[in-house]
Image (cartoon, rainbow, N blue to C red):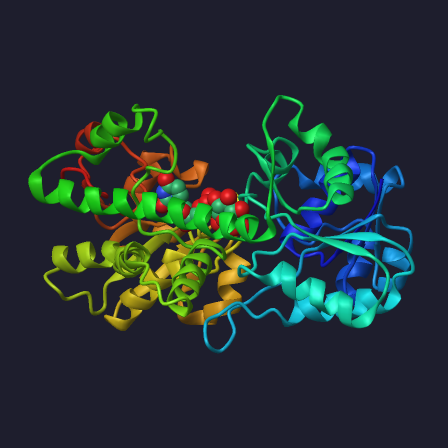
Length: 434
Ligand code: UGA
């Protein structure tokens, strides 16, 4: 099939590349000339495991193209994906100007029937708005389909190639047939393609992310309680997770959820509910608890140093909001750094991929180490904010020789309590005994 993808951000690029991988001819279009030039020269603009291989293979085989020319991109495309940003506007609601703007541009160029697929996370009712833009500007028939994406950063390629489900909001038979053909190769194992109305599809995306954020937050509260009653959250996690109704995944307590999706989507759903005079209480609590959880590690540090960390120096491992990404948007590490520095401490940080992005946000507020061990030099204690694999089995001899004190505050529960006792560490983690 011939496909156009408008917007080559994270979602657009993964979508375009993975659609080319099953034999489709894909043209990705973006207004950012420098970025398009880079991609035309074979440079992948984001860090995402597994994407490089598919990106290069499909470019070499002539199935994946990049352009800044919208007309060229959509001329022959049967299906046009819109993967454009929907940042929170001034009032916190998703700003639809990119999507509606692109819809207008497309509507003025098309000469024949097209399926317009919205991949961005958008408020309920957006498909209707997009349809209205087309109706205003052209007599050509289009079908507007809502197709939320459920990719996780770090495993996005796998998520796209083998999705748990594909959700498609459309009532059009013609679009249903085309989309079934397009997604067929990705659900060969039998996972469902779920067709529904556009509004339900749009809401599914927000409900899924908000539910997962709630699950994590629930576990964070259980962890906080575990510390007070002398229970071990790891045991409780396994104890409840083996009940299939609850499930083992997304039950890991930590220092709050971050990233570009959960915080934004939970807030957007609360606002959508408010606008419809519905008080979505549980999500309001989720937001509040998550705010608190982001600096829980600093609360532990302050308690340990009796509220005085003036002049103390800390090492911080992990900046990205989760492993296998360089994304630091809403990363708990940023809140931790802020709180430590405000309390008069200095910080040296290390992250395998997130250093450049953090530098872009906070500049020289912290020192940047070349590797995880250099970060420990002269540090009074180590704090861990992201569960990168390289932190899981470190060289403790090297750590002992570098850290000033054997003190670790671990926001991701990387080490067993027994091991840390054996090694002689003061080890304060989340929801476990000291
Ligand atoms: C999330 C969803 O998982 C995807 O399905 C969705 O497509 C995506 O948002 C999106 O809307 O674009 P992502 O933000 O990449 O994906 O990251 P997750 O793996 O979901 O992690 C989110 C946050 O939850 C991270 O800060 C992570 O550390 C935290 N988390 C996750 C926990 O604290 N505990 C867990 O058990 C799992």
